Image (tube, rainbow over all chains, first blue to last red; front, side):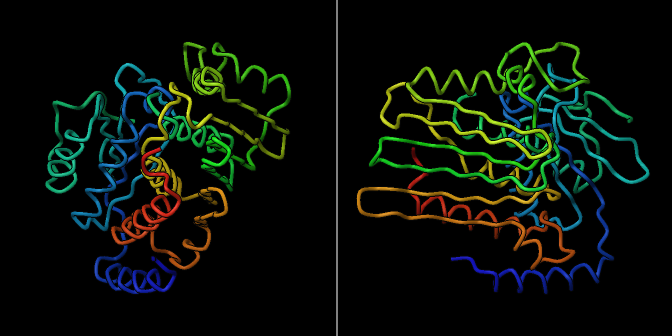
Length: 121
Length: 189
């Protein structure tokens, strides 16, 4: 069983980690979780992002869920927001595409233009 | 939606949109009563009785940014419950919040599966760090009851300024939910 004592250990480790790299969030990922997004597989998209963050030990990434954003025909939709850069919106996402975006965009800094459906605010 | 936990995710998103600070999710699996019950209770802004009625109408949505005024989430969940001899009740009070109770007959041949409850809960908890979740899973069989209780407020307090998306924290929550779902026999319902 997981206990709060396990969390204490995680906290200590994470604080060390944050000291080393200044605790900055480099990329924010926002997964659209409106009704149509959910029906089109957004939950699996979210799940895959969380798995990838955990497996690759990405400590400077934040993932959140949000409601619909008026791109229903391209769901599941994901925004990647980096400080000082234009927002990139990926559409028609699935777990395979998420894995590619994580490797290419988040780890290596190269936008996967094939999946981009919008850029800017 | 192919399963109940996808509907649950949709309902949780409604609560988030209603600015809930605390969302209570109860899943009760009771073979003794042939019942699967889902309760979602939030302390969001709530609805007056007109809006509550409209929310159950497929041609209504609270999402102002949408061009097409259809909101299928709640009506579809209702339909999926009622078509399989289940029931669907939503009550709400402006300023206090909303409670939804959905019952399914466990053995109805057309009942949707519960599906990936863990993915629904994990994504909601981590994807909405500003919202606290109180999760309770209860399994009831004749003469025995097993339950799993998970409060994210306690976890956040323990973590301080460490975000929920920190890899080890994701793993911690994932593993806790996995164990809870196993212990209450909700994996393959």
